[in-house]
Length: 121
Image (tube, rainbow, N blue to C red; front, side, top):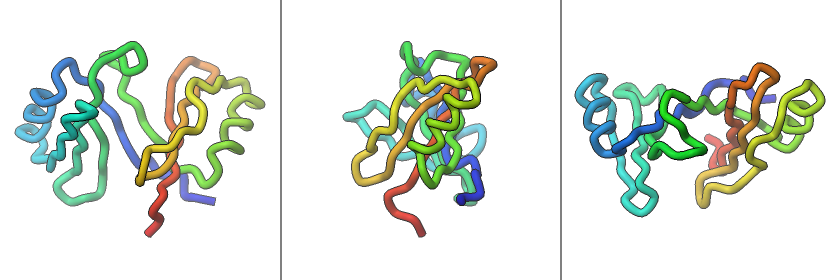
């Protein structure tokens, strides 16, 4: 069983590049921008935390920071979510050459993500 650490945080942005500049100047984060996806990955200066800046959309509304929790078995976790009164929002899906993720809603309405890496270290 994984330690269930927070492994990724997404902060929706109206303008991904401008938001990246803002957080880089504010916190000193290292940025990597993917033009094709219009997505900026950020890494804290010490490499202890990671995340991304996706564009604001219906699935990534402004004001809804998305936290991803480590999972050893996303399918089993999603079954348990439903058993406990939550709802699967987005089923397990692959992020090419990176890993898998899924989104769920807890009984209160909070949306969280699950993530399994393709490259455990």
